Image (cartoon, rainbow, N blue to C red; front, side):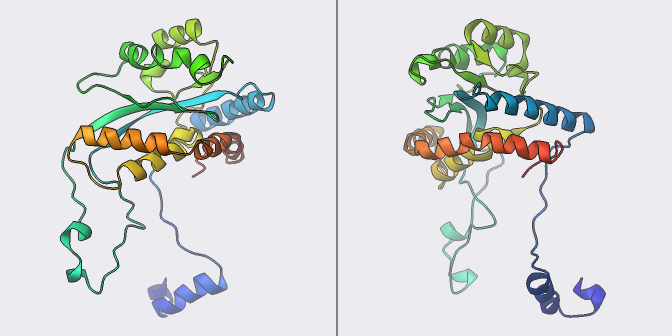
Length: 259
């Protein structure tokens, strides 16, 4: 803009910031949302909001999977080092090493306003499909949540639209074992911005557990478990309680992204 208007960069910065009250924001890469997907996001958000209004979703447990690597988690926006000069910064602080194929582990977890599941580590070499998902997650963990987390009360189980979740065998397992769950045709498609695990919990856990790099996957697992147990329940509750407002935001944005 400064070049086009033939004025100094500093002058245009002052105009934008002081006179217009504006500042610059980074553009974000997101999943393309077609018109039909946006319509489904709106209609399903309205349905879920209606269920929430009458208390049906009160005891909802939100679940998700995520891959963690042994590398240090970084945020280029605020990962800074204070020094008199670049050359004065020790290499271990100046550089963040990255490997072509870092060791990693897939983790499943779920949270509600009143508790959390244990972290479930998927064994290396195991392909996640409907069968292994049911054997490693649904049967040993989700099936007993009424007793282990909700003191005998019924609960609602949420999962996203991953193929392992929407498979007929998985949906049938849920119908026979979990009285209330969000059906594959009820959860809005392409909606990580509606899942507390995605929009809050995983980010917090990764920042804590991966604040430094790990030499082994075992070390990474220990750190993840330690920080998972240390995370305050108030933090999880706040993330879960933000769900209805996010449904409203999706509706307001006519199905578009809200972040």
